[in-house]
Amino acid sequence: MPNKFHYGNGYNSVNSVAIIWSIEDVRDQLEILNEDRNINLELEDDDCMEVLQRVVENHDANYGVNWDSLYNAIEYCFEDEIQELKNERPLQRDLGIDY
Image (tube, rainbow, N blue to C red; front, side):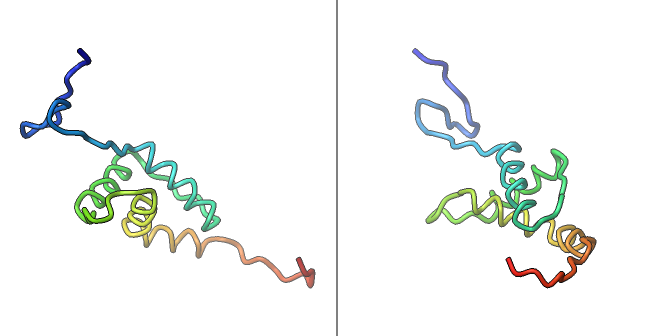
């Protein structure tokens, strides 16, 4: 028989399932956000846990948690930092070249 996992509050792998989202999942979405926004936002483990907590507190059971949930939670939790990083980017000059 496989190991029995205990999830707390009487829930375990015999009577329920648990879907785990981790700090690494937040970092994966952070990488995408950084590419999308052309910034370099860095998050510590505690910051990633803040994102995960935001997701837990605001998820809708009708839709669940998904990659967009993590991405949006990063945007929400670190909106000011993201804006500051965007404002620090050097302006790209128009060289008259059409791409």
